[in-house]
Amino acid sequence: MKIAIPNKGRLQGPAIQFLNYVGIKPLANDDRALMVPTSWEGVQLITVRTEDIPSIVETGAVDIGITGLDYVLESEADVEELVKLDFGRSRIVLAVPQSWNVERPEEIRREIRIATKYSNLATKYLERKGLKAKLVKISGAAEIMPSLGAADAIIDVTSTGTTLKLHGLKPIDTVVESYGVVIGNRSWVKSEEADRINLVLTMMKGALNARGKKMIFMNVADAYLSSVVSSLPAMLAPAISKLSNSDAWEVVTVTDEDRLPEVIAKAKTAGAKDIVVVNIEKVIK
Image 1 (cartoon, helix red, strand yellow):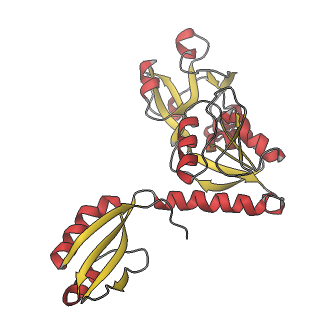
Image 2 (cartoon, rainbow, N blue to C red):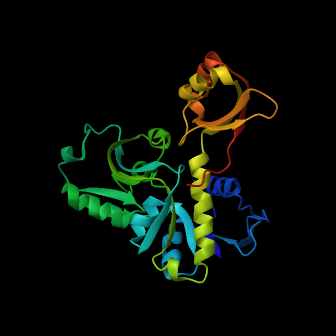
């Protein structure tokens, strides 16, 4: 089984960290390696340009790929979004010089030149907005183009807007919201690797489900069991088991990490003791 991942850029680090979290760990760290074996027998990582991943997945040359939704939409590749990831959030924006007295694209009354590597997304956006513009196709950094005089504005990706501001630009509209995705060929379920692919996707979803969750173990005397259990959150219901040679119970539940102080406080007030909190690696639904 082959998984395509970015060979550089904003998604490379998070993609590798996520695969490590899933349990698919690269067994080589040579940046020049294009095919990398992993800790999962029969699973290889293929490192390629992020923007090429949708087309490569579409051809079936690799089984699945991790890329950005923006590149999927730009490529117009016929692929399936299998997993929405919790990293790589960004926006494709129309940005103009800060000196322009405009706050919305509708306020631009003349034809302008727009530098972008997102030709397809930009063309569709301009048609939707009814803007007159000539696209300046580039493959590198777009932010420098207006100051060089090569373009009037840009359509490019931004996460925080800091780089735009540093280059004297301001975003005035969002073309598309983007995030990291796992994509697959439309016919992946019929492939020889379908079972392995499905297992990998299950583990990926399980890892995402476990993000920000904690498992809590506690001991509860019989007299306090009802009040403790009623105070606890759970995915379905708290698990309860009788402790041997005792009139007490072990209660186990799961909560979101940001609710942990509140949950512990309520449980202690209700009568729980010996509270233990542990990390969760996977939640398979």
